[in-house]
Image (cartoon, rainbow, N blue to C red; front, side, top):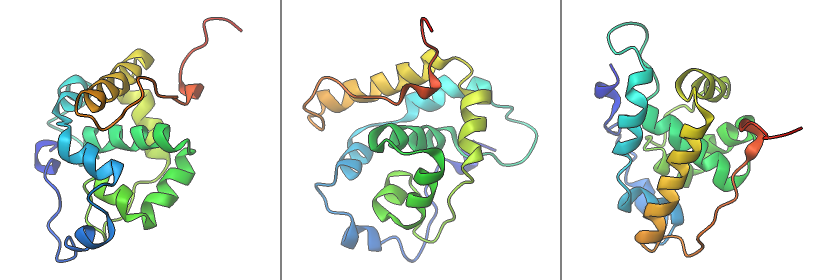
Length: 154
């Protein structure tokens, strides 16, 4: 079921992205230069591939969390912004008219699919590393919302 969801939805409105998301937009650059397939390879073992409802593709869910880190938004605020911000929808590889997820899906994704908090940090770190190599990011650090990580001490 996940494999069928990997491709972007075809829509007669897809050309709008070329009009409203500039070529130098950071999210456009990241989407065009970074192959996110390694995220799928890391997370596919956490999915049941032969039963249940269609799931939201793991790469899209990871991209939601990456956007959450980049923009320092709550789950609810991110999902709300993704409803109308076409640069976010472009990055999430959604058609302009597609509905966004329910914010509770992000919590479920973190708990059920990213069982190890270190995995999220590893995946975000890999994206930052690739973005620096490709010249998309200049800084060698990124500030990540640590509310989902465990503190070493109280």
